[in-house]
Image (cartoon, rainbow, N blue to C red):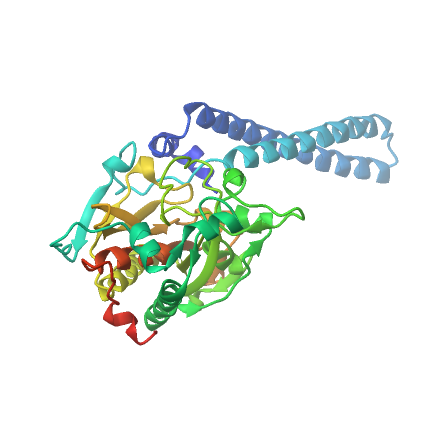
Length: 413
């Protein structure tokens, strides 16, 4: 949730940062108007309450002195009615403001580049040089089908389009990647947690998926949702809690299946495993004090990047521009892995600092020197398992269609 106090203290900057994220000006105008109405009604409510208290004392004093209090009691009754009406107006405006604000994204950090879309993202650095092939490299779906690793027909038969069955070495390599990622993250101090794949609406609200992105989620008939990423349950492990400052930072890693309808991706990446309704991911989540979150973002990016380097996969760090940032993110670094079959870099990890945006929604606080303050939360893929499998298949392929196994994975096989 955005910090609504910024509307009052620095609306112009607040407005500019939200416009950079493509928030409609009409939404911002409605937000400001509703906020100002609420502020006015709250002041009116306080005045009426002060009047009620003063007149109640006056009635008591006159009654003790044996004076007539009928006129004052009549005024009290009238003021009480106004007080009740004002209370209702404040309550309704609070609800209205919450409803509007719940659909407004996080503001951007000052160092995020301004831009309209992914074409204006900025390359921060590249890691490892792409291999030069003496033959034309194939795409993963062609390699996988020939080797019997990827069975797209079986996935379609069992569930429909955008589902894949992994078999034999494809399935074993996918499992090896999960174990490798968990071990790698654990060596960097991230605690392994195992969480439900089904969550309630409040949990999704806490990390920003609801209400805005309900169309992208799979919902059961009894009110549960399949998680789109384990960021959702892992971050909400501390929902509505106050964490002792000495326990921060909290660093966690989690393997999960993820489920997304991909409602806005019709026609994109229809072949292969790039964009699936169900996929696996190992996630990083950190909870920190505000002053430590920038350093933690660097640490999480380094962890995911070093993991790709350990697998021998060329990749680059991309700072997302304002127009390409996610709903909850104040700043995001994407890692894009080189796919020689496609002859392009593709996203394999997205690591974001949400500052106190999710913490405000999920009510995650920390206590230091007797004072409660909002934490900062960060999350990132480490890595998307299917896309890492794709990258290994394409980067380690041979002219005869066979695929070598990276040294880092051999002990897991």
